[in-house]
Image (tube, rainbow, N blue to C red; front, side, top):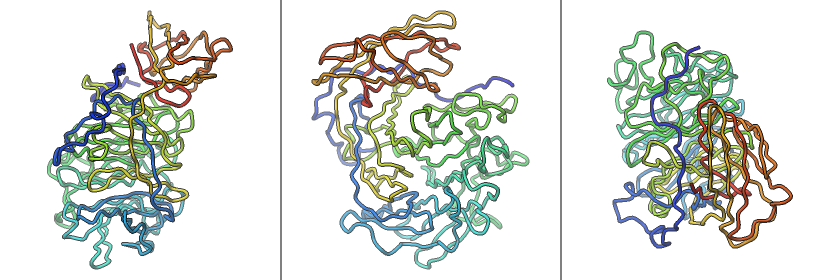
Length: 510
């Protein structure tokens, strides 16, 4: 089986975080009117803290949310059964649905139902919703237009999906080009049994791009002439990207039009992809690869080039499904998180923060926790963040604050051949003594710990959990402890790029 040839951004480079705090006024300053989308914060990611405040309850398995840019400050929230609910910050959750398509929706199985919603730029005039759902009677993944003025559902595009109830995708979003993008999973089951990811004759395992502003011939939509496979024999012309497993949530950065995709993994790796604007036709790897690792018995086509993810994580410590989010482009927290991509995980609730580092890599940090079982991250028309969670069915507003790390980790690496020793110095930069500690960090792919010192260390997948030894359990404010390990590697001897001490993100020194 040939080795994969990657295109696109490289893996995160070494994360070197400035340790000198910015003045609080600079960190919190709001951008001038009309400049919000251009703000990129320089606050180190470990200095950020995400929190949530519940603002509504009573939703029944909410799946997605969208905001009309019509001056009403409303949020539209889809429920799995087929209803679209309305929330307003002044009046709360309306008891009357905006739309109800339950008679058309197959919600059998955990992953079927009404899954996505998108509003066209002219929503204020057109009064049209675009909805993605699994349809009765056989669970076909379906894209439809719903006309609010007429309470009429018009099916635009459908893909058979009868064999398994999982991996339906379901994200809808209008791109900066005005076209509608739709994600569809690989057809379900385990290990891509239909080899859908790498096939071009099916919409399964793809992100689709169509023009819904008009119809072409017998189709109620048009295929853009610059879609990458319009001239490929046997290929579905609607395909924009392929090689995806279950791209549950993707989004576009309002500032540069780039695309961020959270693709749910098989079990070893969850991944996030970041693609430059207009990069149609890319192969994102599944099922030849899961994340950065070759997938056993996967579908590898000789000579194929694949675009690598910019971030992967192992679900070993409780994660199960990445929930792709958005780049923050609001005003309220622009000085803190402007230009930062925020995502989470359905099971672990970890808040992931990613930001391009200007050198081809990405800074990364864990900056808090979301409520349990978040299914979607959405934004208001002004770019502020909300999330919905599956059970018990709530809507939560997301806020950000600056909270300086109470720990710093400095790294020393001595590499040779296929081995390396890594020494970590952990400093208590807070004002409270640490009595008993656990340090967690990921290793680069292909590294395996052989031995360790001054710690009790375990490795699960690529994630290391290092706990104190009896003689170094206490770390006074300003004091440090040193620990280390010997690792085998397959070519990448780089040190860890992020750390948490007792669950809190640490600054990373040399």
